[in-house]
Amino acid sequence: AKRWINIRKSYGNFYKVPRNQTKLTIMLEKLGMDYDGRPHSGLDDSKNIARIAVRMLQDGCELRVNERMHAGQLLPVSSSAPLEGAPAPQMPRSRN
Image (tube, rainbow, N blue to C red):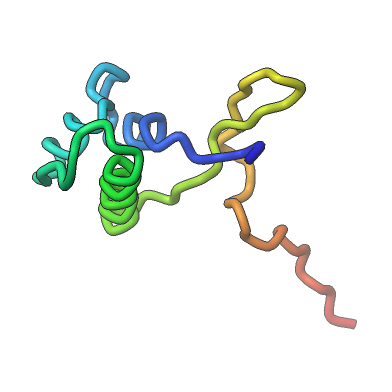
């Protein structure tokens, strides 16, 4: 994976909260959810992150790739970049 969605970054930007309020348990709590499973279990953490992502989508968030790896460096991705998997915008065809 060279590009991904950092859910903490997306959550903070969408709900306008500081970085210190984007820990998994805090995000769940603020969304009115309980942590399901065992803390620090990779599978359970992943399921809880997915629950947060679903809620964000329901609340109108457009999740976009926001980080990438290039030549061993972690880089941000511009928020104006197209949605991951979305087709490139097309110019309207002229009517002749």
